[in-house]
Image 1 (cartoon, one colour):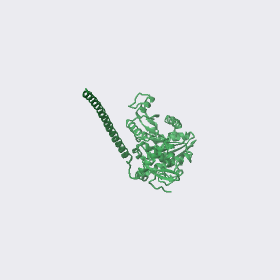
Image 2: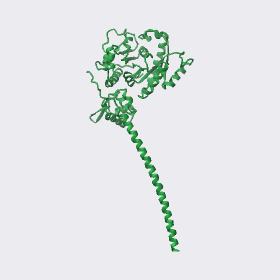
Image 3: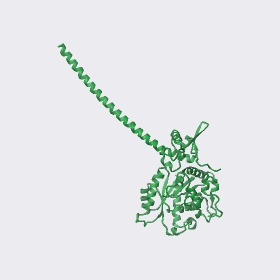
Image 4: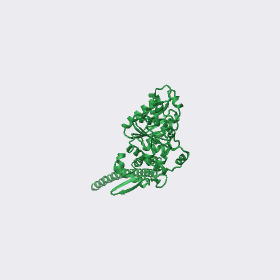
Length: 266
Length: 141
């Protein structure tokens, strides 16, 4: 795969963006790729919790600091490859979860966002050119917010994660049309927590469900991840690709990773 | 006999003149209709230009560069140029056109339009003119 940035976004919260982004990053790095994972959900950061066990010393620099010009691209990235014994490499950039940092980011002006998107481009350029990263995954905040739009603008591809809930589908439809199509960004859909027992699509095969979703959202569906009760019951901070790599959830994501690889190499 | 010939000739000339006048009248009517049509077209062009200028002049504040949300208020032709400049940071019209795959002249026009709108800045280095988005926030070194 040529060095690419993939944004993981959704119209509403709770669709599984962070779980998908984290596990995709682990799967790719497990296969020998050099991967970066950025937490761009500044209002509800969660990657610092997901990787809390992997980070021994206190985080020196957050992505917030980088966007404020307080550290360099290399200083903000943390290498967690050895802790997970990955064949490849995984670098993570974390967002500061403290209330003070969240309050600070909420008070930023639109002028600051102009600098932020330029800094994001410079971080991606450094990741690809200096740190030789193959793929960068950007975990964004849900809905239309500066951090998610900045992420979409700077990415080569956006994966819009949705469930089959009608509110999710409607939100995704609006976002794909009014945002991604308007900005001419390449985007695909990933259906998560798919249940064959879903009220809307009961009795349909997953292929026909996927084509129904494609009909509604007018964008290709790259995967249908079934809903697994045991995944939902786990801690959201747990990383399935590490803890239970043979789980069907991980297998579904491996297929998604392959499709992304194929899509981005075209 | 001589009078009768003259009368006939006069009548013939009269009828020819009448026919000519009728033809001229019809011609003038056609010209008048075409002029009305042209006036209508011009009015429509003026209305469209006015709407376009109102659209492109909408921005959050005077001189503030475009954030990613305000990109959506720009016409697509200008939006593309700004998005490339986010990536390249600073580029000539030729550099922008290499990314957008549009003609250099198109990019030059779009970038200069964005400069007039206060969204971009431009600077000359030798013979080359570079366009860039000015960072409104001072970065710490």
